[in-house]
Image (tube, rainbow, N blue to C red; front, top):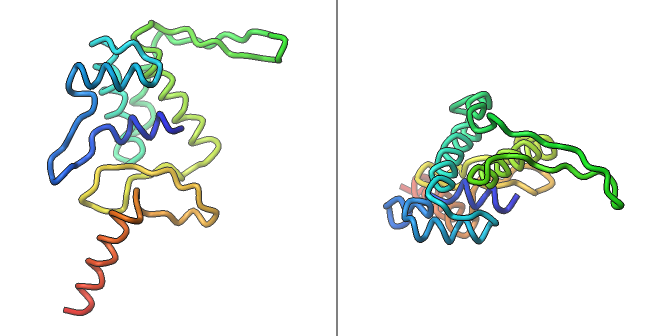
Length: 159
């Protein structure tokens, strides 16, 4: 799930400017390799596309059906091992990491429905996974976005 959040949050706003961790080939290669990818240009292009599609789905702007092109030619094959049942992912090498992100999103939605969401701060582009018991987390970071929002509301009340 951490890699999924890393992908969703790979294009943050820093001092009002968008920074894309997958935009620069050398930085993107390093990002992908740290998460088990090969860092090829084809893989980075597919990761950017996957990120944009998943962000739209999580924000409620698009349907999960928009993922269909990402999953063409992908198969999971069951294998019986000494440890039990194991599923092997069969996909083109440059698509493996992107497909794993889609599968992680699907598993997250199944196990923790509605808990993957965008930050409630309209000036933030980040996402969060709410692990709280009450399912009421609103900000990617209480220290940053939460405090800003609370300070903004306090200022509005006292004006």
